[in-house]
Image (tube, rainbow, N blue to C red; front, side, top):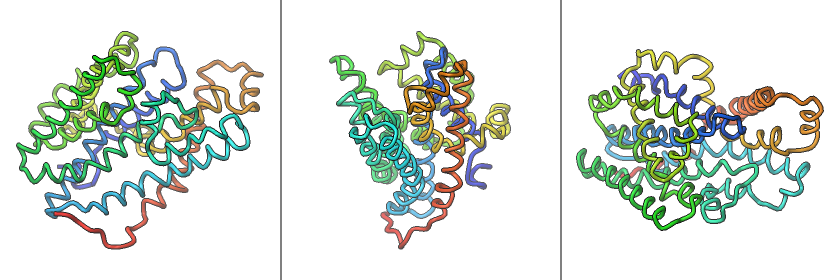
Length: 355
């Protein structure tokens, strides 16, 4: 496989970029992009696919999974950039928004529990509320290596059946809660109710290449579904319902399957154009930074900026473009000053592996 030789898969960075752009535009309130939240579900599927692919390859190669090594790599990749954003948020609220000074919203983000705070309290943190999705992913990373190791020991068929059964259980539990009128915030933000997208990605990663290729033939249907859901208000209302999470994730699965098995296709060439590929590579930092930047520049942040926009009465597309540029500037600063240097750090001692 081409991607196995070079360590990454062409096109997936472009898919990340489109997903984070959809989320960004949705958060700006731009009319017609109400369905941008589906980018989060695409990220879930991508994460489940890539993490399972990595861990399964390690197990196939070494007969074991290095838990410490895995957790070290995840912490090294995720925490430094998060620290940078949360430090900036803390400084900003201290000097410019004293009303938020006592909210302590950085702590649920820091400990990756923002999803549960929002699920049970309905609290929409002003500057860090978007970290609910990162919390779901981190909770998956915490549990999945152990569970995957158990499944891999059962053999291919039983392992795959176990993943499918887990996805079915999550779906059934979510629908049971919805039937009993559980608040949507609880269903949307709970790890136990919105993590099946990660499992769908894991299932895709566990299939053999020919099965993935056949699934990929359906990619036009998946792409159309995601595109329509992004712009059509009726589809947005369907996708945000508990049953709507499944087709969104499946649409992401078939598009990813096409990218993985058709590296010379037109789809991959389009996704791999330089601007998309570069934004996708730094998409984690962009996701972290865009939400507080949007708050400051568009939704009631500190007065000098609001006064600047108010005085000149810029059209909203211009304001959104400026917000994107500032978010990207902070993203690149984070990438070159924080993320790239910390990704070169080595584990301080030999990791313990479990066969």
